[in-house]
Image (cartoon, rainbow, N blue to C red; front, side, top):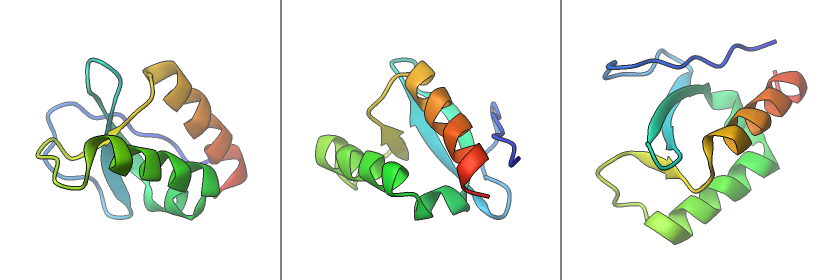
Length: 81
């Protein structure tokens, strides 16, 4: 099962991963690029683009709470390797 990595204070994501920010506290998560193939994750990115636009200086901000994001990544880890 791919491991979701949560990193604090790191400027770059490891190769094959990217950073997203989630929830009111903008918690930083590093997720595998393989998640980009998932229609569910793509819908979340589309919603983020609608809500926040592409010119966000904070990086990719996802419009969901942390517990929802954790459930989504747990599902993706099982089904998208």
